[in-house]
Amino acid sequence: MLALERRNLILEKLQEEKRVVVSELSQLYSVSEETIRRDLDKLEKEGLATKSYGGAVINEDVGIDLPFNIRKNQNVQGKQKMAEIAASMVNDGDHIFLDASTTAVFVAKALKEKERLTVVTNSMEILLELSDVSGWKIISTGGVMKEGYLAFLGARTEEVIRSYYVDKVIFSCKALNEDMGIMESKEAFGTTKKAMINSGKMRILVVDSTKFDQTAFSVAGQLRDIETIITDKKPSEKWLKYFSGHKIECIYPK
Image (cartoon, rainbow, N blue to C red):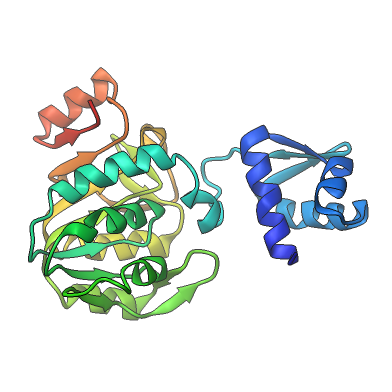
């Protein structure tokens, strides 16, 4: 087993159990305790865990970005339900943007029954997911690949995005805040999504309930920039009133 693969498994275990023990991990993965300690050192340096006596605990800071493959396996049922709703809003023949979020990967899967779609994306994962679909036009933005995110970012990516105007922009975000708006943990993600928001006729934000009332580093857009928000649970009355007052359609599984 590669060290990176083992660290990701340890991180998944941390996500589930909140705490891990060196001796138990050593037996589980058949490596020395010293190797496990090095793994935990690496996770601590990346801000994903905090070492404790005999093990480590998860860093639950909302500002920390977990690796893509870990995030993809979180709240799978909720993402599938949101993706189905988003897919129902897409018509055959539509031109759409899909961002490089894990949620958008689920949307891409849910769209496969549609016909003649044109999909523009900065997500390597989505390009792979849709590689076997026939009758569609799949366009990669290109750009600089961001390590650990499977995302193309940068000036070239944004230039390509601005060269299109699509029927629907379907995207997610790191945090949602009444005052600050739609937020991302890294500036490059924020500016990329801002370019998408400005290049579409209809903007659909697909975001799970844990992102509400949070903040992150970079502002990607304002809530007034979107027409529809899809989430996995009924929002609080405060948020429902806000959406109603700003003429934002809010859809969630009933």
